[in-house]
Image 1: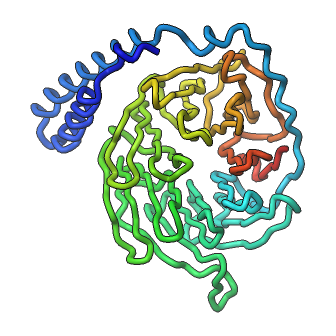
Image 2: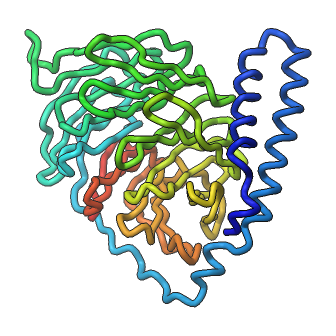
Image 3: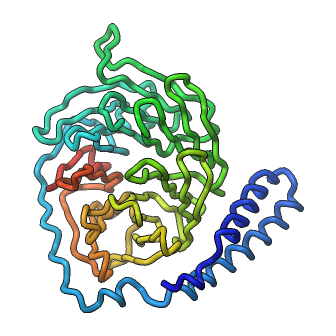
Length: 370
């Protein structure tokens, strides 16, 4: 990429400032329309500069490389226990345990090595849309249509023998769509009210609140060193945030519909996305733009979830067509699909060591692949 043609940091910062003004001006239609026009002009300027800087695609540069072999994944375990659609899953930091949430109103903690249930947690609301496992394995969090995030202590039981509620985080004006632990005392949430909040779980208070997206926040992924995170939204953008102060550092365009999933690569230099526009994409933070575009041969189904292999050579996406599709990221070639689920694949999670992949589906099952 040509560095001299890249949009300046001041231009991107200006776009973020204008977007902030736009969100603050909702009640005044005249000011809102004026700010929208100004914002659209700045965005067009950034896109033009990015297009000039994109002198080559990653497929052009890697065209003479040998093809990536097909992903040798196979189903190792089928985890059965949920009685309704599985909507969210997330691996623990130990690369072994996993939490799943379902519309049956239960969280189940699984040992993915043995396939056994470790713990079942009944929820106050069955409309769960997101789950998160703390890196230490001490806590799980969940939320959804109840407009609340509930944190459970998996090592402490109440009188009925179920995990104790550590904290209930309220104040959301829309459903909770994503959450991730920074550590045992810090949790970041994204919701349909377009807000991103960092919570202090010890005190039960907000450390900061961000207004940055112009639509529901749908997905979130933490940088490997927890210094930053990316969010995907219904507004078709992906934003990079500084964990320390909640400032938006970069905005990425390209998708033409809701961004349902984002996933950082372990290097922290780039991330993958999956969208309702029936594409998966690769964005590089250093290039400040999209570097890869991936589509299925049929191009009929949208993507709900995504993950990147440890090497970064393979991107995998769960799809509405009940399969998990894979591509060679460098050559932008479809590399086959994994079948087995009988309904929409809603979620996909990979452990930090990259030795397995787990998927959740509307068919009520959780599959472990390796």
